[in-house]
Picture 1 (cartoon, one colour):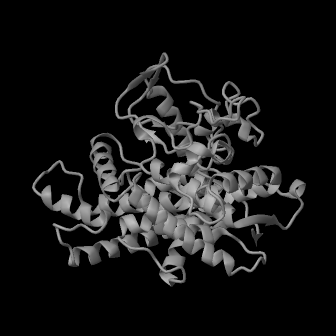
Picture 2: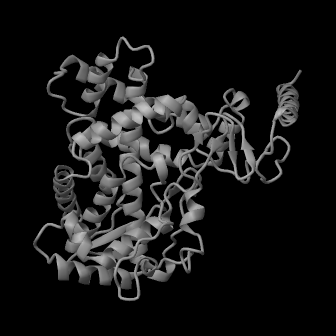
Picture 3: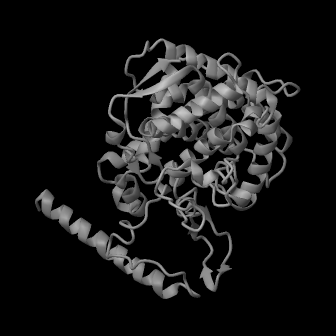
Length: 442
């Protein structure tokens, strides 16, 4: 039989099995499921739903970001304590961010006003903040291993949002045997895990239980304390994947928000000018910006909030699994159901934002120009599963934006009206488009 004919029969059999499986699941689901779009044969709801389950399947439920139940509780509690011990939300982490921001300014000055792509300038500086926490030290900006890690993180963020990744998630039983781009994400994640596993070995060889140097040391010490506890979640797999969760999220989300933010400021130069004026009035041109300045800078604070709202970096949030049959608004969510928080729908709710599709810092200002909070501002999610690094991320965004705009004006290569702010790809994340910019010293 010819190869083409064999492949056709193979795919037909797979389709038949999937249809039968779908019908069986519908017959055996108890209770009243929430309403949703009618699934298409074979494709299901692929065209309506974009997920990060490719990512989730490689984690296998390990690591704090995608864990559930008791595993999540143990890892979440420990991670929060460890991060706080290493300065998250405190003066010590602020000083680290300020130091990294100064390194970034040095790199920006080297561009001499010429066009450049800001992607790795921003990811290097942001990544060094979380690297100091999880690995105990920063990387040199020209370190080849560091640059390779950042490229893998950036590429992973893009690959997770492609249709190929979503198709792989829904039909991995078939797609794993077919060649194509969908295998790329697997290799990227495995390479990142291998790097962290090697760092764990290095830490183990020189560990002093009385003087932990970083997050990895703290986790190793906890592993030793609980080695006789059969219910402990402190093992090497959770160590590697929790560290990867922190390193990945602490690098990509903040750097992508900064990158997207600069694009919005170039498209709306009148907004950038008002931020410059507030920086000059409150901070001046010589003093290093500090987090305490935020309270005196309502317009800049509103701009940063609006950037986060409109860019909506992770629109569907991180999915979590219902650990028992759950009643919700008259519907039944069966045990094992994945639930998505749909952050994007809240960030664009007309009940809370007058013109949600527009970039308007006024969404976060009252009639007197004072900053006003908004309950629908949830880019970090909310509740018990709120982002572990929210405090650090908020501090980073304010300090980086003010430090950079204190020293430079942004110059686009296109007229503002021609700047395209559409995401490069949209799925798990809204990935900023690729662009070049110039920085003009002030």
